[in-house]
Length: 299
Ligand code: 0X9
Ligand code: ZN
Image (cartoon, rainbow, N blue to C red; front, side):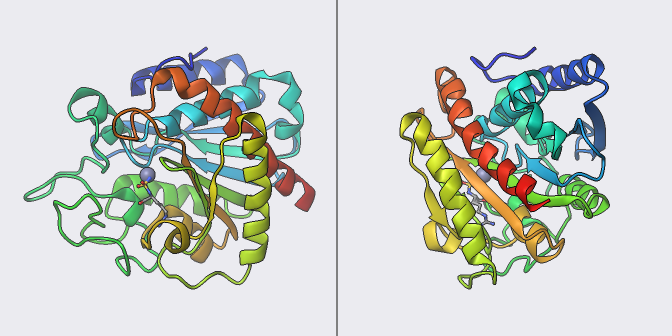
């Protein structure tokens, strides 16, 4: 088991996932999608208690190193899916592919060296690290991304220069037939965003993306009154190309693709106090149930 009263180091997260896979071999699979730049295994959990051809929801956490509530929530989601009997339908009717920490090198660096590190840890010529959420190859570098190595939003020397983003691309491509919905978890600011990040133009199916987001927002708000803002990144935040969710929709063709910015707190917004983890997890899980219901009803 793992606690939700503190944030965990990468090794503890990996140990928890291994323990879960060995305790529930019939419903939990643990795979390595590849190695990070520094050689850590990037894990993906496969959860399902129904047919392997069931529709699948893909969850990405921890792409940005300092946004600790993202992996924390994703681990809570995993625990609820696997260990809470009341959620059995959620794994009988839908399969889940979940990467809790896409950027483990950066995540560890925020624990050991620099709490507010955002990027990967690939070595550069002047500065290290690439913003993994500017590194995906769909209108790469078109907006809101920097070509300067030292910038916080450095998009990298080329699209998919980072092993972390190229592994995510490959594992999504390998499971494309089943993936019906994608969510990337970030913090902070309470936003439910859908594509496009790279342009202020809206996708052809914006009405469907928006109406599901409205239902998710209402479900989250119903728990403790936490409100989210809904829209595309240029509408509600800023334009930015190279995000995973744009690539997932535009290139991989998974139409229902979202980015959630979970609530902030602490001194910098990214350092939500550990005492707040569980409340955020409980309300956010209600939102994920709505995403689940949508996918289940489509099938
Ligand atoms: O800038 C980002 O990548 C996200 N915000 S954060 O504060 N978590 O860094 C916003 C992502 C929205 N998606 C894109 N614009 N691609
Ligand atoms: Zn982020």
